[in-house]
Length: 120
Image (cartoon, rainbow, N blue to C red):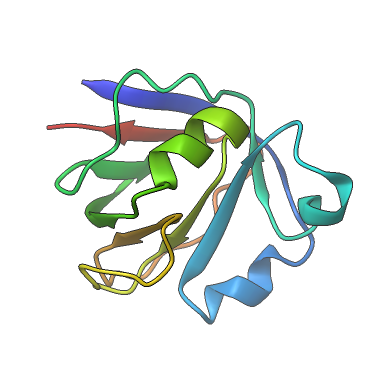
């Protein structure tokens, strides 16, 4: 089941800086201008079902297992198309909007590339 299916419309100039932190910030196209430079911007925030541990984030052909979903992450995904993804292998976080994924090398998506969150 696909919970979110979206297309990247732009990559903020400062997104590369977050690769060292194993972090990716996702925002819908109506992101405030001051946050656009740090965001992977996408065009769909219509989430079919809550994101949960055990789901997968798919960027292009790469899949990353979701290990933890903060208590506010689904709310911010629905309202703002926003989530902060950490590819750190952690199964918890102090910040309620975070989504933690397996500790696996990742690359930022490219413009026009699909992003999906799927349940298997």
